[in-house]
Length: 381
Image (cartoon, rainbow, N blue to C red; front, side, top):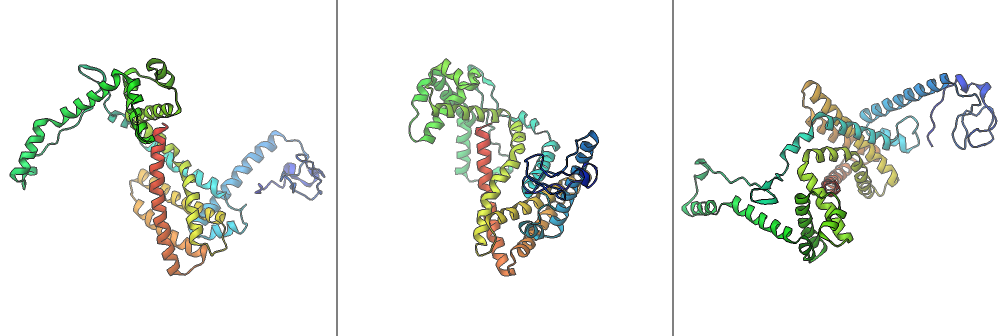
């Protein structure tokens, strides 16, 4: 358990120390500055306003000192801070989990504040009603435009295909097909939902189509309103399909707001991803003495350095207009190799092989996690 250093003066003087812990009742010696059982400071003096303010600022200064030591060691001594931390030297440095979480919040906060993503809401899918079809969204598709330069190299057969495509008017056909489907749904929404068949995903897709249409037409907000108005079956599957349709509908109408919400959740996504990645680190270094937790601490420290570089790159770009992101990525690639060499103490060849292997795994997992996170956020938005 980590303990916070206390002041030697004030209410922590020797004359204020007791022989019994005021928190847990453990028997103490007069020389004990802390209770060995609960870690509370040994002081019998009443807490005054001066003591309170003094301890408050001391805790801030102490935290800042550990924070600076952590940043300095992390940036200048790749792998060493993890070696010292897993060896037991922990009070001198910030907790790896809290440190990474703080950096992630800072970076994604800067990104979210740097641009007004809500402006993207102007580019939402057009949900206005189609003339002559009340309640049915108007989906517009731009017709392909091919200039004179784009027709060069096409033979007569290709030109005939283009002419036939133009004659059928793709936009009109698509809108008519969409309107026909939506009209079919609105004719009897309950019957359309009940016709859903096949596997779970197939049924869910059919039901989501129906729920999306009735949500847009009647501005429904809850599943209970849909049940009351259209007499849908109150089942778990229908509830799930309705919530998903409502969430996707909000994403289409408010893409910018959704993006802002997505960015705010990214720090938490990091902590679901790194524990899984640490399993592969453990497998790669299975013959080493390090435990899974040691490897997790290593991944936390590495990811923390990555966020520090991203923050530096962001500030340089925002404040003086200097784009050094490419330099940050190169620096991180070199840093990662040096940290792996120093922490796991293996030769250059083995480190190169595991460096390539773990980076490949990292990008695969990151891609899968990103897709899952975006889809999960979309259906729960």
